[in-house]
Every structure is written in C-alpha cells, then in structure tokens.
Amino acid sequence: MTEYYTEAFVLDKEDFKEHDGMIHLYTEELGKVSARARGLKKILSKSSAHLEPLNFVRVRLMQMKSGYFQIIDVLPHHEVSVTEKKKSQQHWGILFAMATFINKMTPELHPDQYLWNMIKKIAGVEVDEATMYQFLLKAFGFDPQYAVCNACQHSDVHYFLHDDHGFYCKGCASNIGSNAVLLR
Image 1 (cartoon, helix red, strand yellow):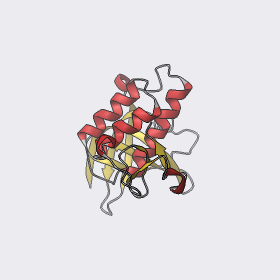
Image 2 (cartoon, helix red, strand yellow; image 1 turned 60 degrees about the vertical axis):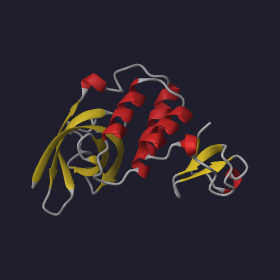
Image 3 (tube, one colour; image 1 turned 45 degrees about the vertical axis):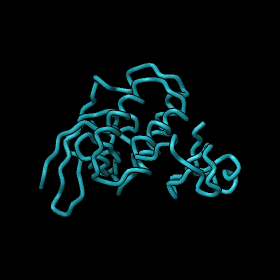
Image 4 (tube, one colour; image 1 turned 180 degrees about the vertical axis):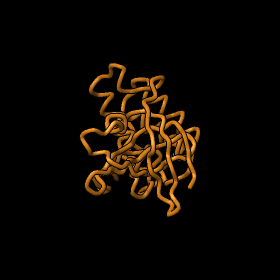
C-alpha cells in the first residue's frame, strides 16, 4: 500500500454502496484520481462538506493492494478555496462546466502541471465559458487557434466535440449533437 498527500480539486462525487462515496479528484501529483471515501454519507461524516465538487482540498490517499484509491484524510485548502470567495452565479456555472469537462477529458493517473496551474487560474478569476474552454483545450493540446473543421476542413471553428476530440465550424455544428462546447 502506498500513501500520497497532495492538493486536489474535487471534480465530481457519486454514491458508492450504502454509506460510501466515489470522489473524482484532479490532484497536483497524480492527475485525475477516482477514490473511495468510506462513510461519506453518514450523518457524522467530517469529510463530506470538504469533498463537494469545486472545492480545493489537501487530501491523503492510500493506494490499496488491489489498485484502487481510498481517501484517508481531507482538509480544506484555504489559500485557493473557491467556496469562501464571493462568486457570481455565472462563475459557479463556468466552474461546474470546467470540472465536468476535465473529468471527461482526462485519463486516470496522468499528472499535468500545466493543467493543474490552469485549474487554479480559472478558479481564481472570472472568465467567460468560451475562454475557459479555450484555456483548457490548449492545456490538453487541442489549441483552437490552429484547428480546422473535422467535416469540411474550414478554418473558422466554433465548436469542440469531446466524443471524437474534433473541432467543427458553424455550418457543420448542426450535425454533431448536443455534447459540443461553444468556443466563441
């Protein structure tokens, strides 16, 4: 069993068994990690509030012999806390979209310091949704500045579809579905 102590951004939280939860984190040292939090849904759980999505935390993770991670301890990270600062409703929506997008786009256990710094930067300042997606896509290696439409090769792209990691122009966007994110 290996133990890690790292900063993390909580991406998502799911129910797991009767009293436990599965927490999706983006950590500074490990990248994206899905970890089990025992007793998370119990009324006396001390870690439940800290493990809500969009929180920055310091977390101690234990990698079990079977390979899965378990959260041992969690503390709020006050220097970069998102919840303590007053944010507009629009910014909360953008942060939630960011967490969802990162959760879909990143593989497990692939740390990226540039992406970690971008998460902290976006969480700390108010940006619009299109700018947030452009920053993140650049961090993932999909710079919209150099992209062309996957369908017609037009250079004026407006949408990104994470299902096929492709860019699309306005004309071709009607055929791609609702999973596309708007870049402009």
